Length: 114
Image (cartoon, rainbow, N blue to C red; front, top):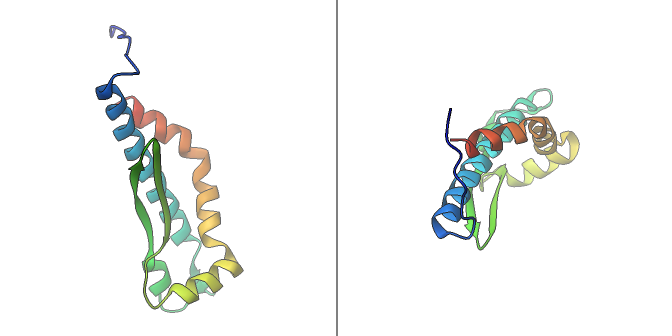
């Protein structure tokens, strides 16, 4: 049985550890949402050549002060205008995020317990 250790939450090392783990968790959440968003696109449902599906990417999380910011979207390039039109019609990014939400707490829990 593990010995429980009381953490000093004001300590810089603890804060850095929690921030790193939360950043890793957000990156995994974003990659999961990316995978689900890509699955929402298929021939007859937003896919013509596959360029849009290939352009969907998770944005690596960054720390700004006490905030950790990440996300998913399409990479810049020729598909950006097409991506907006297809998203309005099929909401592939939104649906990908909604399919990810049920697993968010499990992902965070996994990363915090490492």
